Length: 228
Image 1 (tube, rainbow, N blue to C red):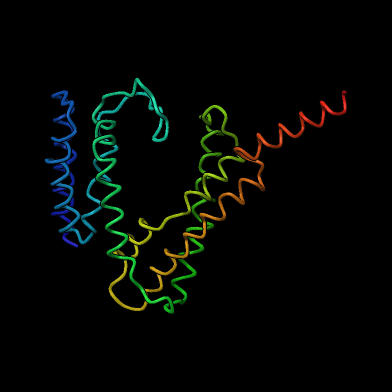
Image 2 (cartoon, rainbow, N blue to C red; image 1 turned 45 degrees about the vertical axis):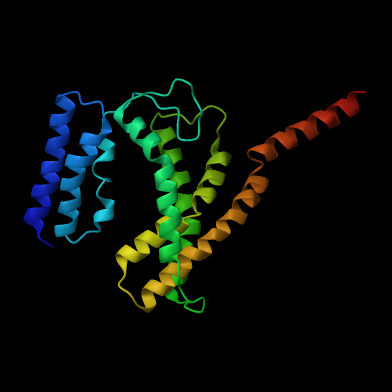
């Protein structure tokens, strides 16, 4: 790793962001083109995957003090650079992820091994556990869950997030050279699609989401029957 070049380029990217923020730049394009390019070059010369170039950049973009969330439709969404970036790139990213999955998913189905089960356990167990525990820790620290969301819902969200197909494929491709280990890791990522069936099962077991509403309605019907 060329450490000095990596630090210099990444530091230059952060300095460029600071200058753009001082100039009150409202478009996300200057942040993407100048600091983003410097970050890309820094990761490349530092031996890291340059596709991660926006990871050190996006958290530093000017953003609204509050955000309704990715899956909340709101007529008054803020127009800060970070939200504008999210809206502009939503459809292109979906198409890119689809093409990425088609390009990188190919792996013989017989290539199971230790890497397969390590990746699968990390996704199906580690991801839900990490989301649930970190969210609960945040509430203990004084933050609050969104209205209508409780800890049972967190478990279901964590299991749903374990459907890590494209991202898991990306990191497997970035972490391992071509060979048996990469094939095993890819197959583990492919098996993580099983979380699509585990998420409804978790919701049913935890009585979360629509299953909680069904339980409430049944209880009300039972109470009405008894009272009549």
